[in-house]
Length: 247
Image (cartoon, rainbow, N blue to C red; front, top):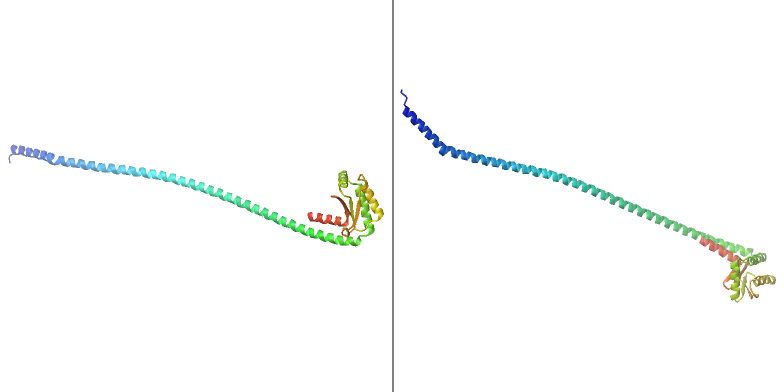
């Protein structure tokens, strides 16, 4: 079998024509399609990566914001807890102060009630003692006791302090006279002693009027206008009762 160069050349030409046809009508469109597909795939990958990056950024931002919110929430919780504790302490102190004030008020009220009760008891006891003393002294009132009280009254007149003397002299200058109340009639010499004592305080002997008052129990009550000298058992008992009532 002999080699046919013409056929070989025609085959080469046919192959080259086929290659050109394939490249021109098939390879380039396929290559262009592949490139477009690659570009599309790459774009999808890029978009996916961009989306992933955005998602990661959003997640990071969310985590940061969440941490910030948690910190802010904890701070507000602590602040609220501090405010609630401060308010609780304030109300507790106010309640304690109110309880202490009420306790003090109750204590003061009880003390006042106790003092009032004690004064009432003391007043009743003093009144009973005064009544008992009055009954006893009425039984013991004798002329000798009345005489001794008169002597004491004359000594008191002689020993009056300067301000009392001035008051007595002023009263003698304006009053109608001296009124002497006695528990029993006074003897003439006793009246003379009294009149002599008052004459020492007046420019001229004052007029003296005498009355009897059994309520004096024993002793006498001397009045010169608003000025008076009570030297009676009744006066002493009254002063005792008043002192007991104010004690």
